[in-house]
Length: 49
Image (cartoon, rainbow, N blue to C red; front, side):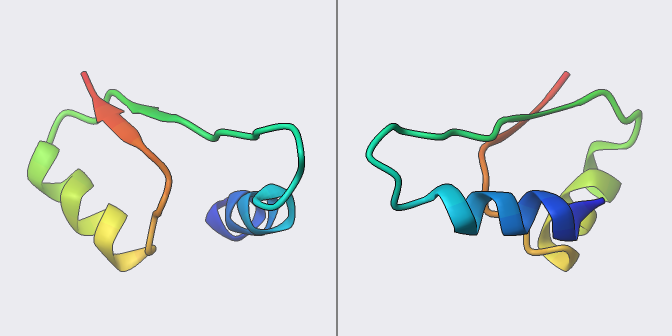
C-alpha cells in the first residue's frame, strides 16, 4: 500500500496545482503507529484519532 502512495506523492509534487496526501489513523496503539510511520518512511501529514 505505501509504495503506491509514495510514488503518487513523488510524481505530483512539482505540479502547478497542489496535491496533498493526508493520513488519518484509527489504530488502537499509537506507539505502534509511530513505529510504522518511521519504518515505512511516511512523509505525508498523518493524524491519529
